[in-house]
Image (cartoon, rainbow, N blue to C red; front, top):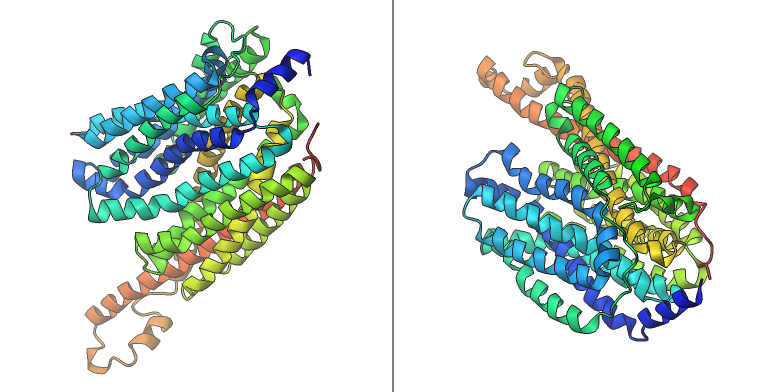
Length: 508
């Protein structure tokens, strides 16, 4: 490290970095809270704007697609503008877009406002993470990331509950208006509290890199989002994958050869950073297996409502936040290796436990497993993320943060697409197996109808067969969810390999 870099580090790592960290967390909390709240409001938006299920999904899909386009450019913008300015500008954009979403008078206005909201949100997250690693001394980065992680994971825990209450008992527009006071508060406090960060030599804007990454990531995320409904072998999906592969290949070649790349890909030569990203991919897939499919089991099989499901899953998210803070303090002493290995083992074990769900599993049992799973998530997610970012030189921290966010978005979309396809296929398989045994004249049905006596008619048998078909779906869906969690358990075990490359202690 040069004397100039040491001086800059002393300037940025003020003794009261905790206050600045709290300001940074405000924006991240707002962005993540909004995402989890909007997801639960999708059925209501469908009724309000009189649109189909396929169309209303654009409220979520367009946000993800825009993030894929805007996040890669955040590293260049941070170097060009300075991360304080970029963070404040992003807060303003997100807050204004939230107001427009709440005021939307038709569906197209809502979609346009969601695009603008994703622009702000896509710049807030990587700029916030980059500021943390520029602001906090290396020997305290574990603690800082533990605090960051608590806020990041408490937001999705509160989102479904707050969103469910606002949508059901107040007004759906408040799920967007709730961001306005948070954004205004964050804007004024950030302007006063956050220190100025040195602007790096960004060079001219990399137009080829931006266009190739935008087309590639847009095509990839869109294909992953629509693959299940359009068919993975359909011509549009194959074309999207082809465009994505070609565009991303151009992007990689351009970034490795151009003088001023938009996103510095040479950060992947740091082995610990690359290993941490591989661990993060597995964590994201494991997380989404619980976030999306456990609520489906609780609502479709156990008959719980949205708010009841949110309350059942909340202890797990809170456990993750608490353990992340504790593991952050431990990380500053022993590094990431043992924490990550322990966390991955717990995730694998709890995924195996969840593979034993059945139609009679008590909600209390599910809560215990979810809490244990939250502990595992808290043990591995923060240390792996921090260890990877800690080895990156400060001049590349913004690029590493942007790359981490891109990988997280793509791995989330990829994991969701793969798991959904897997679950759909296994449910269909088990339904066909069970249905072959259930007909009005099968031995199973005959045993059911034997006590009907005078009511033993064809019409009664057909009605009873419909009831049996509903039972078939419940059993088939539960078996599919069980196999999905077993699949996730094996995937978590594979995560032990890249985790072995994480450092035992913090680098000096």
